[in-house]
Length: 90
Image 1 (cartoon, rainbow, N blue to C red):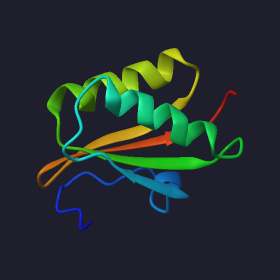
Image 2 (spheres, rainbow, N blue to C red):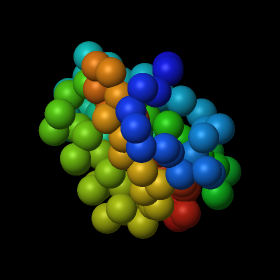
Image 3 (cartoon, helix red, strand yellow):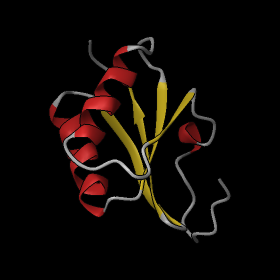
Image 4 (cartoon, rainbow, N blue to C red):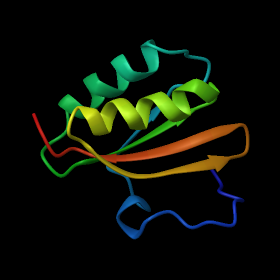
């Protein structure tokens, strides 16, 4: 996906290890699927999640942080949001 926003993603998030496209999904399924994808990554692995459900753009990063994962950034992109996460806990 081409990023036409003026803000740049964090350097570590520019090349995610995995991308999870959740466009069309709604909460709570967005976080459930994100959590399962993160659990499949090695420690330090990066997951980029794409959502188009506005509550998910807030709830996924908040829930991931509460779970102990690192939120690298949330960027609005055409048609939705890009959420970059790094796995920090099991």
